[in-house]
Amino acid sequence: MLKVIETAIPGVVILEPQVFGDHRGYFMESWSQRDFDAAVRPVRFVQDNESKSRYGVLRGLHYQKGQYAQSKLVRVVRGRVLDVAVDIRVGSPTFGQHVACELTEENHRQLFVPRGFAHGFSVLSEEVVFQYKCDNLYMPSEEGAIAWNDPSLGIDWRLPDQDVLLSEKDRHHPPLALAEGLFDYNTDYYAL
Picture 1 (tube, helix red, strand yellow):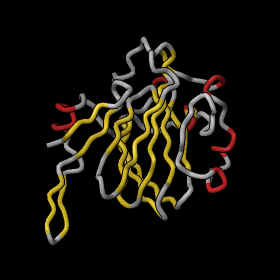
Picture 2 (picture 1 turned 180 degrees about the horizontal axis):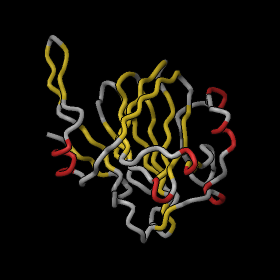
Picture 3 (picture 1 turned 180 degrees about the vertical axis):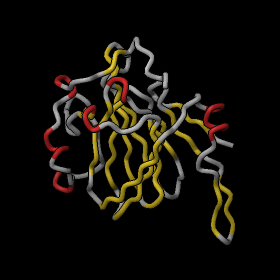
Picture 4 (picture 1 turned 90 degrees about the vertical axis):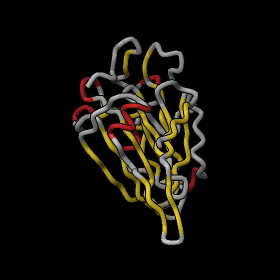
């Protein structure tokens, strides 16, 4: 049974799978198309990604533009992250607001990030293995991004600034007010 936890932003949900544990370890169903469609909404994921990072790494805030927009279902296999989804749908009542959720290998939680949101995470453990499903293929020419430290977003990444490790690309993203390729709240980005 998949437990769905609503967040402050409609559409962004936390999922908790049922975990069966005993003296041998545990078993859980990490993905079921049937259960996800019934509990959240129908989504057809077409690509799985995995990254490995060390403490202090911050990846984000990324999104894909227009017809290449992506919904993501993210989870941690090893370690601990703070995962963040920022509403970038112009005209949305929650535009510029974010949901932050701690995902760990112990809590087995997953975060569903719909199209129309920028996504990022910070690594809080010594190391992390992070997996995510996407409902659209990655298109490098349609990347969009927002500065991780944009003060208008008010995100507490739970890392001291001196510990934050960024890619060269992630050092130079614009604030939300100057970002390109944002979404229109009145357009249906849930369509595949």
